[in-house]
Image (cartoon, rainbow, N blue to C red; front, top):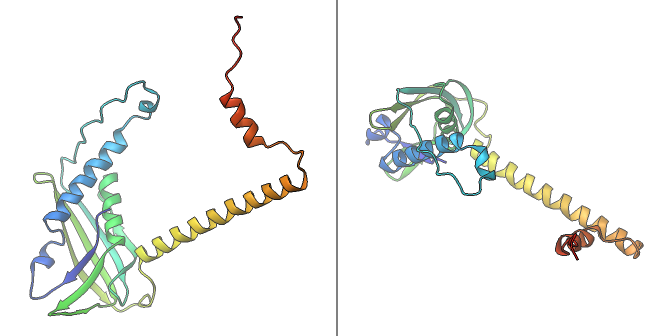
Length: 208
């Protein structure tokens, strides 16, 4: 996923012109190619005896533009995307949304990093001639009641951990119940073991 920290630096206007460095552009191009390939990949390939070659991804041939309004907390993390206008290109819109949710917007002066709580406008512009994406941003409105809220990326990671823990707890509970039933009734057949034996035992041949 493209993303990472973007720093406002009045002494380095390059960051204001474009938030994607060379490596960021290469990642976005690769991400676009991968997304296009996955969307075009036929489901029927799973049933084929030999895998079909992956189709060559077709990158967008026209300029694309996305504008998003994002809320930024006191740490410089994007809390949520409030409003926006999309390009109409599914893979590009998906990647820009994912990128925005991972953004950090900070002001660097020397070795000091500060963040300004507020509502920011973020623009993504895709150039079909170079396949490069330029990302720019500006402070739209200072302040907001989301200053102390966790960033979107932090919440996504936290939710994933909670879901994984809940899944593990549910599996452990079912295993414990199964073991309890087996201990209470030793004559109860082990369905899993019987299933494994049925798979391992070859079917009798119709011929002697």
